[in-house]
Length: 99
Image 1 (cartoon, rainbow, N blue to C red):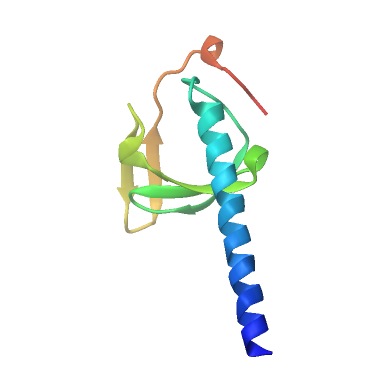
Image 2 (cartoon, rainbow, N blue to C red):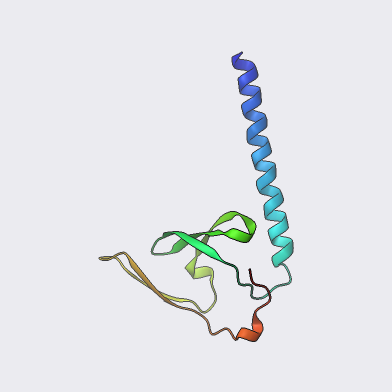
């Protein structure tokens, strides 16, 4: 019985891995030719160098490192765990997609 359970668990893990890979391929293909896209998301975690967001449209969580966002200025106030940031100036006409 334990061998069957181990086999089933391995198949489940492989299935989850394949599902995540498909989502990543889809997301990369969608974003490949887009410069700016706007989607509704929920911030799940905020740290001094990153935040984790849940993007509703794709049903995925992603960690966003502030240092990788061009033009983003951040200030982390450790005593209060508050993150203050300014975003790049993006004109509304640059919006490519919304949801």
